[in-house]
Amino acid sequence: MRIDIIAVIPELLEGPFSHSILKRANNKGLFEVVVHDLRKFGVGKHNKIDDYQFGGGAGMVMMIEPIEACINELKAERSYDEIIYMTPDGVTYDQGIANELSLKENIIILCGHYKGVDERVREHFITREISIGDFVLSGGELAAALIVDSIGRLLPGVLGDESSALLDSFQDDMLAPPIYTRPSEYKGWEVPPILLSGNDKAIDDWRNDEAYKRTKDRRPDLIDRHG
Image (cartoon, rainbow, N blue to C red; front, side, top):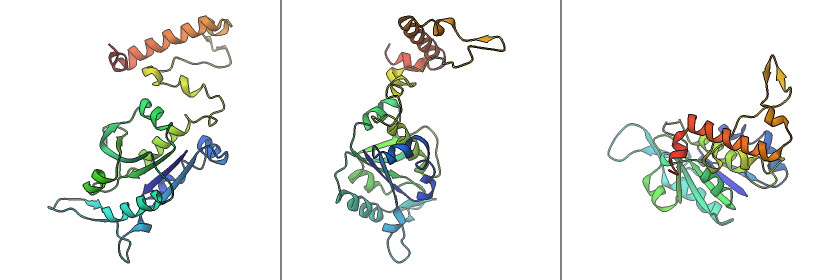
């Protein structure tokens, strides 16, 4: 899988993809993330990428010309399943969307900045608009990093145990159950005996019950979705 990210401040994305799981996935050839500096496609001798908005108003707007040039260059090299725009008024991202995107082959993510992009970009190039929540960031780079991380860990071979991702919170609209590790007793605080029983069926039942209880207590909206 390959994800191309178009960014105004590409330096913000150097850290997230240079460590841990995503770095190992890239080294194994399982997952490729390429960050593109939009200013390289800027207009004129100053590589301009933004301008004042028509009709007046505070804040600059990302211009259509540099964005189209970058997208066209990428599309000349390969076909893309999605061109995603990170924007506060997009569809709120969740695990279901992460699962869906993890099945794609090539994706472009356009990071918003300033007041956003010329609306014609959204009308003619973008296939999906995504928000990570009801708040505003200075730019879409950090939001894009979250999307990439959540997709990457779902790809076969990226995690040491591929079943691990299937047991994450929000898979099947449930929060994950409580988890414990050694020691089994610490300062009088004990691990639930069922987890030490070796009875796989009983442990699975306990985890399912605890996941339901935790979801009902902390995120009842997830349960309400299904009546």
